[in-house]
Structures are given as structure tokens and as C-alpha cells.
Length: 285
Image (tube, rainbow, N blue to C red; front, side, top):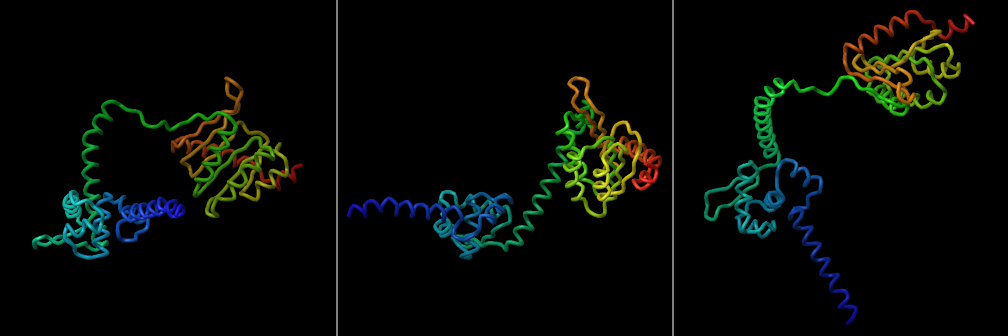
């Protein structure tokens, strides 16, 4: 007898949990993904319950639908009127009125048209009101040039810039340790074969590092190079300037300014034309 009494609260809890789950998802066994998708289209929880119940059982009166969907009767007409306005259900002129679900594809198309219309109207209102204020006040946009400090931050931005490259990647490196080369290599290998890679190095870099980078793209060498950088698709550029004035940490400039990136590319091409291949260096030595 004692065991039965101990089990009663558990059984009640299970029944309550089942009811909650049933109410939460409506009478139709829809997945959470579908539930979230319906929410994303602007339906409330009560509207989802009502619509999915109509889909499962077909036409219903408001009273019948309230019982089967667990939407309170005091709310059911408000919910159905909203669904009719949104284009998800229709009703007849019988007494009492009967409500019908529209096909899901029709509902989605109607919703899409409504959202596009709302978006266009919101866009018009926002631009009409805010554009004159923006232009009169001379609000500054996000700066096109960023200053980056510290080796870790610079390396992270270089990797990000390399990863975003789609057509042409130009890299100038005056000094490079084997450690840094190993950190950068995986980023290079993720580039697609469509990306043309040119790497400009100095002759004081270890031969093993030069050989490793030569497998990633075309490599040229120079005796001297003042500063280095990365140019991606002529629309992003990182210029590594060396130590900063305050604490001696490395300093770099990143920019998405097309004119600056083109200027950097022209300078890179100039240096490239006055450089030689690793094979030429071997013959020279």
C-alpha cells in the first residue's frame, strides 16, 4: 500500500508532463523544427495549435477546435480571426461557423507576399526618415582602416584575410620563422585551387621554410624588404609595420579600402618584378 502511495505522485507527474507536451505541440505530432519554423513565420503558440489541429482533423467549429487544440475558448475567436487575416484559415457562413485550414504551400506563399510587402514599406519609411538625418549630420561610417597590435592579433587577422581570398593572394614576408610558417600553412592549404598565390620572401629565411612555402604557391626572393603584408583579391590589405612606439609590440594596418589595396598590389608587383626564383638563388650562390 505504501508503494502505491509513493507511486501516485510520479504517475500524476507523468500525466501532467504528457498533457504539457500535448498542449505545447498541439494535437498534431509536429517536430520542434516545424514548430519553430511556424513561429518564425509569425504565428503565435495558440495559432500554431489551432492551425495544426485543423490540418489533422479538418473543418471544425470554434468550440470543437478549442477542445481539441487546448486553446482556451475565451481566446479561440481571436486566434481564428488572426489566422484568417494572415491567410492560414478560411470560414463559411454557417451557424455556427466552421473553419478550414488552407494548404501549407498556400499559407507560406501568402505569408511570403505579406512579409515582402511589410519589408518594402518598412524600408521606405526608414530611408525616408533616417537618410536626410544621416546625410545632414555627417555621421561617420565604420572606419576603413584598422590598427592591429600584437603578434597574436596580427596573425589571427592574417589567417582571416587569407581564408576569405577567392581569386588572388599576394604575400610579402621579410622574416619568417619555422614556427610561424607552420602556423600559417594550414590556412594556405584550405584555399581552393582557383586562388593564385604569390609569396615574396627574403633570402635570409631558412631554406626549409622557403621550400615549404614553395609548395603552397609561386615563390620569389629578394635580398631586402622593408615591411611585409598580405593582399587578398585587391580589396583587403594588411601591412605589417614592425614594432609599435609605446611598448615595442608588433603593429599592423588592415584595410578594406580598394584604392589602398590596389596601391599595395602595384608596389608588390614592382618588388616581384625585381626578384628571383629559389632556383635562381641556388645558381647565384
